[in-house]
Image 1 (cartoon, rainbow, N blue to C red):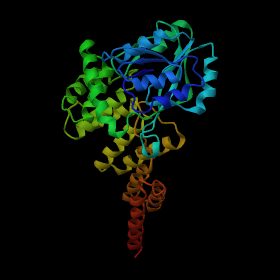
Image 2 (image 1 turned 120 degrees about the vertical axis):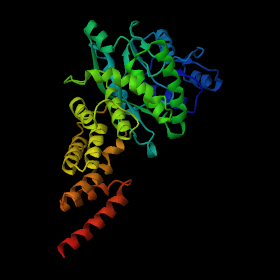
Image 3 (image 1 turned 180 degrees about the horizontal axis):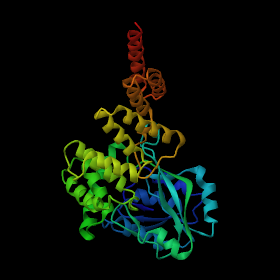
Image 4 (image 1 turned 30 degrees about the vertical axis):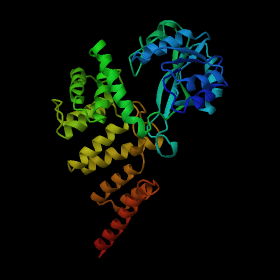
Length: 376
């Protein structure tokens, strides 16, 4: 772990791993005696390291101090799901695994419910000196873990181990976005042209209404646009988010990609046919263009993916688009197409979602009156 100032979650984080960790190493990047006292009460080995605006450097330093066979990486605003302890022990016994993908479950929604789809990240891995992180923020293994695994004849495997994360609560989001944006600008200054950071920085700046976002959005898009003729997308999953941002900003007249909106949606459908935000975006565009049948088909696809759980979870996205709003909008499409029975069924499903129940019930009432007038 690396910890700056404890915000009241450190004890919870340490307690969540106390049963399974043979050693716990904490890099303290700020003077916080309260945090150090909490850590030492759990038998943690605490090391002080001045903060140098570099998460990867701090984590690599912590990794280098480890002495056991496996490393599990946790942040102070996270906690290991107690139900995952048994599976983690089983993972450690697999001789052919280099690393395990662990699900980071955001808990910033109402009543600590997930707000975003879970993100699989390689948080559990063998202690091998060459496994090091890069990046001042949004750090990642360099070289990629899959490359190292292939060379060593090992695997990077998926697990159902969960880490609960609540560090991006709404009251702290802007503060963290500003910090991350500053670190990403430093990262791009040190190593220009990194697509990952161009995309992430444009997103962070857009969220805090910083117009410099469009410069980085353009830089990222200029790297991706020449690849649009490929049948398969590049390996960087954040390109899905990039296409989504380009579609949104171009639709608002804030950005010119050099492609028309339909071409962008066609690219999105070809490269990312199972990622909900892009399907949702396409349905919205089709509806606004008066292509109601096409919009209904896109929403039906989204309902199908949500129902059987076959949608892509990476990049992470706001899970609320898989809730009652789908059924409300599909019901409106059906009503426009004269399919009143199907519309009524959609509104009934939407009424089960507390966030959409009032709108759904209102639509059911309006629909019933319109059907009465039609019969008369």
